[in-house]
Amino acid sequence: MSLWRIAWCYLWNRKLTTVMTVISVALGVALISAVLTLREQTQKRFEEEGQAFDLVIGAKGNPLQLVLSTVYFLDAPVGNIEKADIDKIRAMEDVTAAFPLAMGDTYKGYRIVGTVRDLMDFKWGERHPYALAGGRYWEKPYEAVIGDGVARDTGLKVGDTFTGMHGFAQGGGAEEHAEKPYTVVGVMALSGTPNDRAMFCDIQSVWDVHEHGDEAEEGAEAAGAHEGHEHHASDEVTAALVKLATPALRFEIKDKINKGYNVMAAVPVMEIQKLYDQLLGTAKAVLLAIGYLVVVISSMSILIGLYMAILQRRRDLAIMRALGATRGEIFGAVLIEAFWVTLLGLAVGWALGALTCKLLGLYLATRLGFHIAAVSLSADLITAYSAVLLMGLIAGILPAWQAYRTDIARDLAEP
Image 1 (cartoon, rainbow, N blue to C red):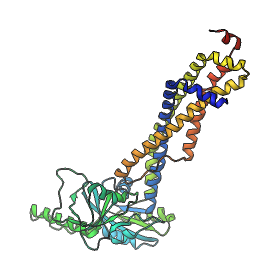
Image 2 (tube, rainbow, N blue to C red; image 1 turned 120 degrees about the horizontal axis):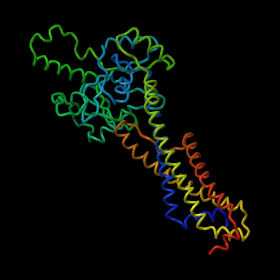
Image 3 (cartoon, helix red, strand yellow; image 1 turned 90 degrees about the horizontal axis):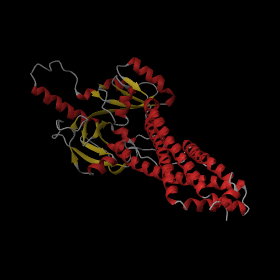
Image 4 (spheres, helix red, strand yellow; image 1 turned 135 degrees about the horizontal axis):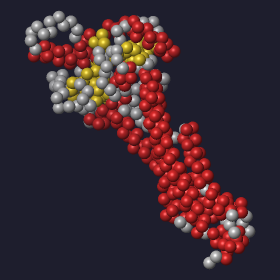
């Protein structure tokens, strides 16, 4: 019988201890797997969306808030800007496209985004995040195209109507634009982007809704309160997504816009990278530290479990020596037990980590529109698994040394 088989049989002679040790290793491995996978996948998806457009233009304020609200639909917009400024930026050399966005309403928590029809044809690389799964794009105001996530969550389909609520918080005091219903004319294909959680319509629709609101407000106030009011909703947009002739010009054009116009330009991928470095990087380090701490504790469990097992089967080891097994083979058999326990812990931990990523991926798909892949063997994950395996083997050295020092005569003489 080989040493590998002997070690395997010895492990399952003490099933409870082996199972508990495997579970303790697995919990640490699962945490490490989930943290590394989610960190890598979410950063990858955020950066992929951030790379789609070279610049985001909006009101002066917090550039991260501008990016999150415009590209990812995760925050309230910074404010409105003059449409004339976007027209001037669009005319700049090296600016190939500037798609205006107008936001201010939601439906069941999903953002209604007014824009131009050209945005729906936008692609980068082989990706077409605005592709349709059914229906058509809008042809006139108050026709809407909705994301796959919106359709699944709300049950809206082509031909249905809905009305927007003013603002981005779903509260009882929100104003409903019941007199201006939208008709769903298209449903976008699942894209794995924030677009799955948005509803797109002609920008004129959003302008009309809010000009109507302005008129109602004027009627409710004193006649002279809005005297001299020259700007209406159709003069303003919330933000604009800008594409340049080459990404290399991002910072140059950004500086020109920030200095020459009463707007703010931000580079999406740069802002997201800052977010990860400043906030999520720290969270990742803390969670990884906890994961490795669990693995260290698990390694201690391996050490104690094997050490106690060696004490309990000293007579068996002495018999093996008497039958011709060398000290090196005894030492190796105990290390193989440590290897088996750690390897089983890695396998179970990988499965638990994959399940965790699956469940969190479902949440992120609903919350962010991002679809997270299962645990994949990245360089960081291979390094982490190697470190766990090494710690398991190191934990087996002391029990193996104890077995190596077996005194045949004394242990055989004991009852």
